[in-house]
Amino acid sequence: MSRTSEPALPELPALSELEARAVRHRPAFGENAHVLCDNLVRIYKSEGVEVVALQGLDLLIDAGELVAIVGASGSGKSTLLNVLSGLDVPTAGVARVAGVDLLSMTARDRLRYRREVVGFVWQQTSRNLLPYLTARENAELPMRLAGGRRRGRADELLELMGVGYCAGRRPGEMSGGEQQRVAIAVALANSPKVVLADEPTGELDSETAEEVFAALRRANRELGVTAVIVTHDALVSGQVDRTVGIRDGRTSSETLHRASSDGRIVAEEYAVLDRVGRLQLPRDFMNELNMERRVRLALERDHIGVWPEGAEDE
Ligand code: ADP
Ligand code: MG
Image (cartoon, rainbow, N blue to C red):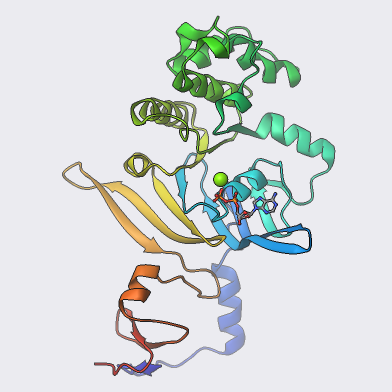
C-alpha cells in the first residue's frame, strides 16, 4: 500500500484518551436499528453436506423504511426472511427485530412474535390464505388467534389495499393479484411492526405486480409499518427507499433513492462496507480488470485506488 500525501501530524492525544473517545462516540452496531442483523450465519446440514446460506450477513433497517432485497436465486434471500419472520433460527450471529432477540426466544415468545410483531406474505398465493374462508374472515383470523378482534378492521384493511369489494369472496373467486392484496391485509391485521414479503409478485404479470407493490407502499406510508420485500422485479427499485443487494449470503451493495431538486428520483449505488472493512467488488468490475485473489490499494487524499496485481500505480 502507498500513501500519496503525508500530512504533518498534529500532537496526538494519549492512546487511552483516544480509546475512551472511540467508545464514547461509536454506539454499538445497530443499537437503534429497528431490524438488526449482525454477522448472521445460517448453515444447513443435510446428508453430511453443509450449505452456508448466510455467511456473516449485516443489515440495518430503520423503523418505517421500505426496503427491497434483491439477489440471484440461491443468494440467501428466503433464508434471511425466514429468520426475520421467526420461522427459522440462525446458526450464529445477532438478529433483532423491534427489540426482540430472535436467537434467544422461547417457543412461547416465538408464537407471540409471529402473531403480533411481524406479518408475512409469501410468493405462493395458496400459502397466504385459507381457501374455505372469505377475504374478510381471512383478515379477521389473526386477530381472533391473538384474542383481539376489532370490528370493522378487516374491512378497513381490505379497503386500504384496494380490495374492499372482495370482502365476501373466497380465494378461489379472486385473481392472483387480488389474493396477494388480501394477503397483505391479513399480514397487517394485528398491526405488526414489520411486514415481510418473499417475492410476493413472483407469480403475477407485471401490471398486477404493480398493483400489489402499490398496496405494500400504501401500507408502509399510511400505517407506518416497516416493509422488507424480496423481489426479482427491476421495476420495484424506483419505488422503494433503499434496495439491498445480497450475494453469496452477505449484503453486497445498496442503492439509495432520493428525490433530486427537480423532483426526479436519483439512484445512488454503494458497495457495503462491514465493520472490519471488508467489501465486495462488483463481479463485472473484477472481470473487466482481471482482478483475482490480490489487489493493490493506495490511499489518495479523498479516495482509495484499487489496482490489479502487477499494475503500476500513477
Ligand atoms: P434465495 O431465496 O435467495 O433463492 P435461499 O435462501 O432459498 O435463496 O437459499 C440459499 C442457499 O441455501 C441455497 O444454496 C439453497 O440451496 C440453500 N438452502 C435453502 N434452504 C435449505 C434447506 N432447507 N436445506 C438445505 N439447503 C437449503
Ligand atoms: Mg427465495
